[in-house]
Image 1 (cartoon, rainbow, N blue to C red):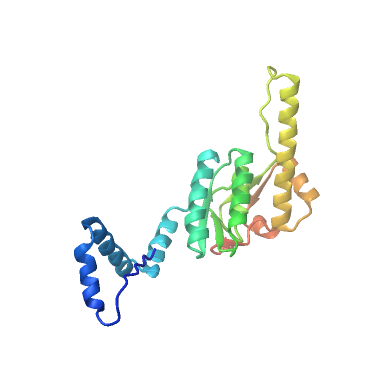
Image 2 (cartoon, rainbow, N blue to C red):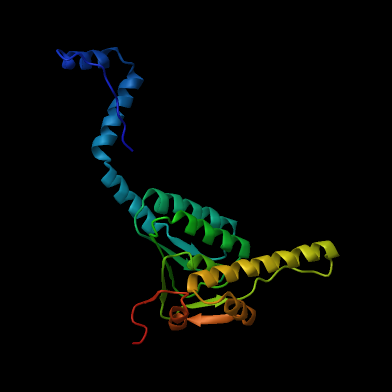
Length: 226
């Protein structure tokens, strides 16, 4: 961030006006001006961007269950690294899944804010269930040779103690989640939505090569044929 101060000076004596400004100014104002000059000289846009890039490289891992905490983490990552930095960034997704609604929300949030299509997603080991939706948010999607991607239908929470109204609400919500997931899978892969619904109903685990072949991933990390 750059700070600019305009100090009025007459053309014939700018040095005198500047000196008088510091003499008459309060200690707090003088300190603020000195700090602003220091920030401008030593924290240029280039150095600030480099520091931000380092932070983005260190804070780019989605690990564990997908929940509200994941949404908060990804939101911070998005604002720092996608919106402000405007540089190519990588988000690593290593998770067995979690809350379907959160996975859908994170996917949409990342896609909506990746206007320059700078986001690459990577998975090592596993990006399954709700995590697969986050993985699919990347324009470039890289999968390690021994990773797997599991896609399946959303599993609602049902109980015999539920009343008929609550049970119906849960069934309706689950159906809506399944429809949203199928839309995401179909849009990213280019495969028919009906095909995605069939795969979700079966519960399909994709290896690295299969994920690339079907369009879930765009490339493997390293040569998986060796």
